[in-house]
Image (cartoon, rainbow, N blue to C red; front, side, top):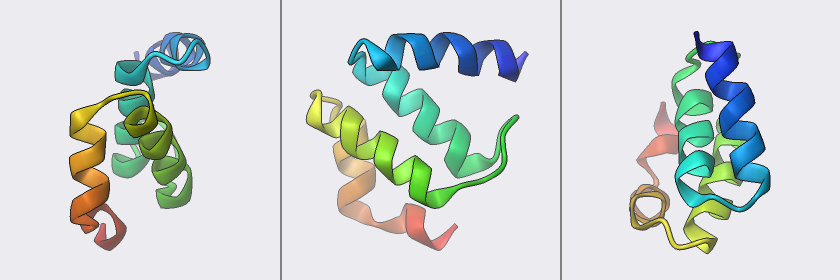
Length: 68
């Protein structure tokens, strides 16, 4: 259930959990259970990257997420 996942990821993301922040970014990038929102995805990617997520840093560095 993507809505439940979003709820729990949101709670964890608010506690600065980089994996939860990355997961939220991916939900918004794909439009998985939520309306696709590249700007919001980028915000979550930046938070995740700032909290040490190497994957988020790589996604941001590639810039390919903007072309989706």
